[in-house]
Amino acid sequence: MILVVGGTGRLGSHVTGGLLAHGHRVRVLARGRRPTRRVAAGAEAVQGSVTDPDLLERALAGVDVVVSAVTGFPFVDPAGVDFAGNQLLVRAAEGAGAEVVLVSVAGAAPDSAMGLFRAKFQAEQALLRSSVRGTVIRPEAFADLWIELLATTARRSHRPLVIGRGDTPVGWVAVRDVAALAVRLIDQPSLRGAAYTLSGPEQLSMTDLARHLMEARAWPGSPRHLPIAALHATALLPGRPGRQAQAALAMDGLPPVVDDTRTRIPDLPVTPVADLLHGNHVGTP
Ligand SMILES: NC(=O)c1ccc[n+]([C@@H]2O[C@H](COP(=O)([O-])OP(=O)(O)OC[C@H]3O[C@@H](n4cnc5c(N)ncnc54)[C@H](OP(=O)(O)O)[C@@H]3O)[C@@H](O)[C@H]2O)c1
Image (cartoon, rainbow, N blue to C red):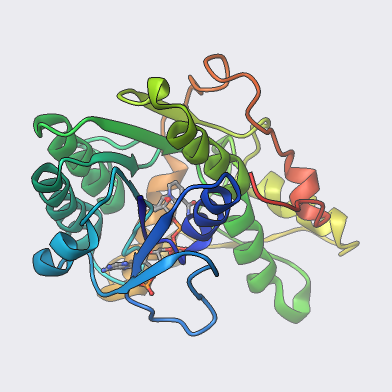
């Protein structure tokens, strides 16, 4: 039995679908906050929070491997879910004798400017220090999510809003490619017990991504930019707006990421950004 924590999310639902398609028994743990995000047919559902140790003990009964695709970002402080929740999950896995595949993030570091990246690093450390056999996936930013966000900000102006300078190259990776890696790690136990940094096939800045989106939609003109001064002011706000602005500022200064996965698992799918822009991504991994 595979437990997918956050199995109703953008990535988690792809992982759940892929695992079911490959014949695995799957249990999904999520709070069920959004009615549109349902647990895939064929998977068992456990409703509740990863921060509840009693629930985790029940959810882990009979589980061989846990895939953690959970995040609290940007709704709650990442320290609460991305670190503390994953730490509890690792402890529960230790008790149940299960392995953990932790979805972290490329660039996770103790001194990152982004709270989420610090929380992910702490979660990785908690896994490393435990007696659990751990595997870490560190994907770059999800292309699908950022295309969706840029399209949303374009609204009727048809000019996406780039927050921050938007000139740092990013290896945007398709969610389905990350899910394919997670499913492969479950299918092939010999690949587990290691860390995998996963990038997409192209290096594009946020501004480039916005331009590609405009070309794909035949929107004239150029993307808009949120003035840096406004971003710094927003970063001081409490809650979600502040966290998102801090993340945008930090993304401008992220160090380059080196993919070390595709040479080790050469037959993983590689989805070009253009396929996502033109809606050509179908199927489960
Ligand atoms: N988005 C990116 O660009 C990116 C890049 C690299 C890595 N990642 C990582 O990839 C993973 C998946 O990201 P995503 O974009 O697919 O996230 P997402 O769509 O926001 O999904 C998050 C999932 O976690 C669940 N969840 C949230 N808080 C929870 C809690 N306290 N207890 C239990 N479940 C909870 C959500 O369901 P409920 O709200 O119903 O509980 C949902 O199923 C995360 O670990 C994320 O940090 C993301």
